[in-house]
Length: 461
Image (cartoon, rainbow, N blue to C red; front, side, top):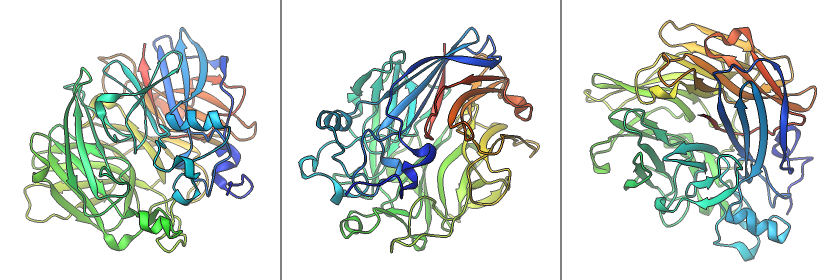
């Protein structure tokens, strides 16, 4: 029941696994500014062995790629996240778990920990943690990338996309399918204080079981998007898709005051759509405004009958929740017409009003093909500027690094990894955040490729 790189796109090209762990001092072209000191960590799926069943990109073993920047020099290191699943398969010498297809797992691992810690990597309360959507945070050494194990205070599933409150230092998080069994409607909301103590974990029921990849947090509220990419164990056991697009279920967003209980949740609705990643959300009077990358149809997954929906891309849209109105309908306003993903901003403004954002986009139009540019949007003027990479090159998520802790919003740099298609290798690049259109000011050349991945963050020295 092994997948085949010749037929599975998530095992081919720059999605294909990289199974070496390396340390390199990188050749630098241009200049990495002297003020840019610290480390960029990026996580992504990288199956240790040929997968069992029909492999999906979201289920590969986590691998951390780290770039250490100091004095204009750049060093690179990558390591697997050695989860219990990784260690068990490593000792056996082959894949044992079936990913999204429970029927493909080896009988010896039924009911065992299948965590992959492959989606994000964050720093909070003195810990660097690799995250995914179905398990506790997994701690790593920030220098060696050595695996330290699960962070026990969480005692359950935690989102891959927590939010750090810039005013309190709290980490706000949630989990979906948080019941006794996966694919339940149960969700939870949690808070970890600035010292790493879990101070709150409340559970509530969503309208249906959904893949809730990310959520939104403002100064006073938390918002939980339950969108019609539905999960069903019964469907998976019948041979259907574990997750499927079911637009007839509609789109729901639960809005909860952070100083109140989950019983006070108010559910807003809109037409079927999907969001993997919001940019930011904040309050203005009685309204909550949220900027999100909205898809008309969820990508990467089939319909419930196994057929493939028409392909569509995400675009930046503003959601408006009027807390004073009698209506629970979400008002939606398009902000930009470029297809894009992986929106980021200056996260010192997380949950607060803000002006500047960045995302990867498709400058050549359409809903197909790889991302080819990084875009900067000025949300005050509506202006968008872009840097378009040479054809065949694909940028990753643009991450903002402030020039200093007290620098004005947006004053700093954008860092990301770029796959160079013609050379089949990757670069780590830095831009002036306010001058994206001028191109990279520094390029650190990796002597091999870094597979496409998900999310990362900058940690200043």
